[in-house]
Length: 226
Image (cartoon, rainbow, N blue to C red):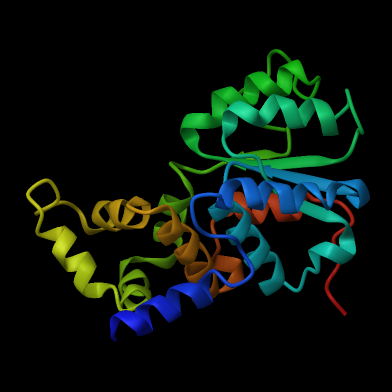
């Protein structure tokens, strides 16, 4: 696959989502514009999480716009309380759910407590409607897809050579392939965003990562698209 072909494949994978330096701000602004009509909101840390949930919902036959469910990429766990207080019991009192990386779980727990959405004695995020990736989204996707499917998707994107080059770097040589794939996905923001869509599309909807399935299963007002 030529460089032009790779660029076209990358652009196609990001179709419908912003890219570039301002992508987080644009994605947040686009989702925020939907909030006045929202009936429920899912808070996620970034665009990759948004893409994965929206693509998975579509694969499950869920029409998010018609249900009034909005996936809101807040730009990191540090912003959680701002949106929880705005949209939760202290604000609009909407049904809320969420998805976060393992290292952000404590930040979300504290934000939920401040927003009157968790009991002080709650263990982690259990019972809050917020779900934690085992490590992060990329780790969940790699484990759900498996190494062979991952490599096939990377090859289809024309990036297998780039991955093999990374594997030969001294710090990654001889490491577990899943760890190498994790580093590959996280080496560029747009790469993680692209593969969030591609990997959700490559696996059966029921085999998607448990935290993503749990978020969608817990949302009210969901119904299959007509």
